Each structure stands twice: as structure tokens, then as C-alpha cells.
Amino acid sequence: MTILNRLFILIALAFSIQKAYPQFKTAFEIKNNDIKVVWFQAYQVSKIEIKTHKSSFFKFNSSAESTYKTDLYFDYRIQNDTLIIKSIYPKALEYGDNKMTSMQEFSVSVNFSLPQQSKLIIDSDLASVFGEGQFDNFQLNTKSGHCELKRFIGNANINSYSGSITIHTRNANVKAFSQNGDLKVDQFYNKKHQINLKTVNGDIIVRQME
Image (cartoon, rainbow, N blue to C red; front, side, top):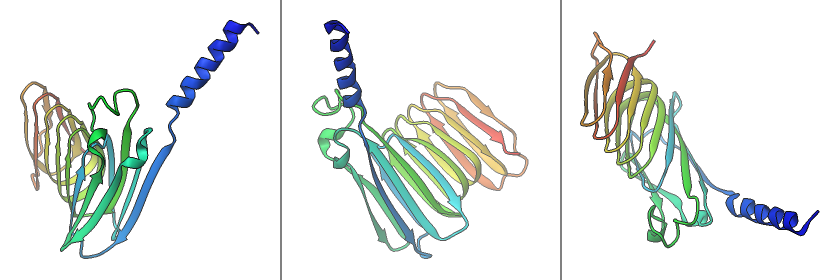
């Protein structure tokens, strides 16, 4: 093996080690029949997956990949009938800060399951949300993330500045507005649930669920 080949292998190995950040995971589970509302303040979270179930527990899992992964964690508290979950992170870990994030990969994902007929509020700066299930009300406010809901039943208010919205549902009265995107909304004859959708730069698709 030539010196040049050895040097190339060493450089490639060093690069792969630098990029292969291990995951940092956090998890908690709560069983509380008095919780009716969940408010998730999901800042600096890139992906959120949500499902509802027929039990009374709330199960939360997160994972982060970054050289600074241990600097971001999630805090939660119960206030009256509301479970409040908040991402905690140093100011320097904000996306776009050249000091710590420009030379690294930074990815935080969340998997969250909650009881059916809950009220869920998500406030985020960049999260894309993927969900399914039955909700009393689903509310999402995100600046740059997409939203995709499959087998969704319930009321919804979804606002995204730069992201597409796709929903498969039934029995819905849909009000959709996109300033710069396309609208493809099926006609629903039974309008039990109210769904309000708004995006500035994104398409909106609402399909009748089989």
C-alpha cells in the first residue's frame, strides 16, 4: 500500500468518525386521567411523530444527534389539566448560529403518543410534524416545517409559514388558504369537525379518508 493510499484511508476514517455522532435519548411516561391538554413548545426540534391510543398514558421519546447533543433536553410539568413540555437548550445551539452549529450536524426528533380526544398544541420554529389518530383539537404553529396527518379525526388549526400541509380525514368542514401554493381539497358532505389550514409558501392537500 502506498503512502498516498494510507493517507487517503486515514482522512476518510477521521471524517467518518467526526460525522458519526452517537444519539442522546430522553424519555418519560405519565399516566394521569386529569390531563386534557398538551402544550408542546418544540423549539429547535426538527421532526415530531404523534399517535393517539385508547389508554390514559402519555409517552414521550426524543433523540438528538450532535456534538452538543447533551446540551438540549426536555422539561415537563403538569399545570391544572395541562401537560406542558418544553425543549431546553443554550442560546448558542440555535440553528443559524455560526459559533456552534455551522460546522456540525444537529438533529432532534421526538416520538409522542397520547390518549385519544386530547387537545394538542405544538408551537415550533422548524419542526415537521407527522401524526395520526383521534383528537379533540389539534393545533400546530410552525415557521418552516411541513405537516402530514394520516387517518386523522378531529378539529384542527394548522399554520405554517413555509411548509406544505397534507391531511387524510373525514367528516370535516375545511377552510384552507395558501398565499403562494396550490390547494387540492376534497368535498366533504358530513361536516362534523372544523379544520382550518393556512400556509404562506406551501401546498395544501386534504383527502377523503377511506
